[in-house]
Amino acid sequence: MPETHVVVLAAGKGTRMKSGLPKVLHRSAGLPLIEHVLRTASSLDPASIVVIIGHQAEAVRAALDGRQGVSCAVQEPQLGTGHALLQAEPSLMGAKGTVVLLSGDVPLLRPQTLVDLVRTHNERRAAATVLTAVVAPPDGYGRIVRQDGRIAAIVEHKDASPAELAITEINSGIYAFDLAPLFGALRQIGSSNAQGEYYLPDLVTIYRARGLPVETVTLANAGEILGVNSRRELADVSAILKMTKNEALMAAGVTLVDPAATYIGPDVEVGADTVIHPGVHLEGRTRVGARCEIYPNVRIVDCVIDDGVIINSFCHMTSSHVRSGAQVGPFVHLRPQSDVGVDAHVGNFVELKKTTLGKGSKANHLSYLGDATIGEKVNVGAGTITCNYDGRQKHRTIIEDGAFIGSASQLIAPVRVGKDAYIAAGSSITEDVPAESLAIGRGKQTNKVGWVARKRAAATKD
Ligand code: UD1
Ligand code: CA
Image (cartoon, rainbow, N blue to C red):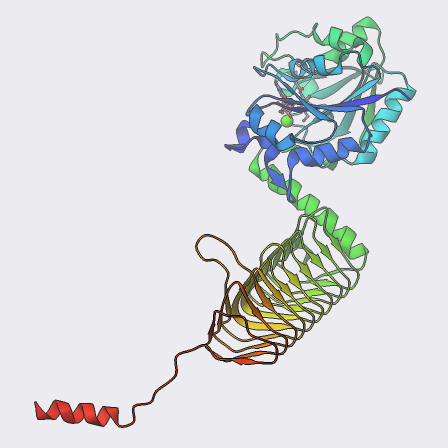
């Protein structure tokens, strides 16, 4: 098998997006468009991937920084797709085998389609193999012109005659090329056409004139080559990616009450018999276990949710762990590095940050728990606040197993509350509380009996 290299075109301006952001960095189903393309490319296990960048090159380069096996080549100015591919020549110097050309704005392509394209290309020892599709209407696409059944040329929409415009077989813009004749031939492409650009599809005519074999592979499902040129198309592609993921989850035993209104990223895993209500967004590397229920309007990013967890409405959770049997929400904010223990309850209007809540512990109402380690079977009363920040540094609060924190208490960190200790409601706790003690940290109440009558009497005297 010849070596495979991939080149991704991503230098174009994307004018119709009307955006300050490069087109290939717009997100669909949570991932930048180019990321979808690179993932598909990696299914070929290529020896190298070269991304052609140009418009806002530095932003695209930064987004690709650190990706294994991916390099960038700059096309400046952008003179057309033929000129764009030529920019990969230095990166592929000395390489042999097959180059697969992809577009950074075509995110739905299936890995199997690329595998089939490359297999046909290699089997037939073609100089070029064009991935085509039959679409109606074919507006905007390059048309496949055939002679005696074989591809003879690709004519761009803007250059096509009325007869050519009627052709419904189109160029997907995805190809496999034999590296040996490629760069020499690219230099022969001219720019005398309607757009004054160096058209990559002109390679077909050049190869045919030289008697080099050009093949085609025709897609069964033209939907795969849907490109993103506008916000409208971005939404269309996102809807397809969403339904693909949702259908896979439903097939695996997950209930989606309203799949059209459920947003689950491509890398998210969900266990069987979990029920997900509308308006739920599961993002990043989130893993949800089996038999969970996630009620409407919840956003979970990069979290691990174990089995049998209930998440009530209006929760926002990032980079946290919720253990089995726990109940969360409504209105809970789990900030990064929070850990809600087995069977723990985190209730209404509670925020956790870098906080561990032990097994069976409860923080049910209106609390801020930051930089805290809370043991098992702790009861955190309504309105408890860990005062973790002194204006310069963060400090930890430690609450040991079985402690009871009375409502409206402030724990001024660093501070430790010992095992089974009690904090009286309304306390400001500034010192450690020994195990099994009661701490009362508030001003003593004095009742002035008869004070109102005395005040009234004083007023009438004047
Ligand atoms: C191209 C094809 C057309 C095909 C269609 C499929 C050409 C001339 N036409 O048309 O036959 O039906 O794709 O979608 O190739 N790009 C660069 N540098 C440039 C120009 C473009 O990197 O100088 C990149 C763009 O960012 C984009 C891709 O190449 O990712 C395709 O360019 P685009 O201008 O969208 O080509 P189409 O007109 O769609
Ligand atoms: Ca395009």
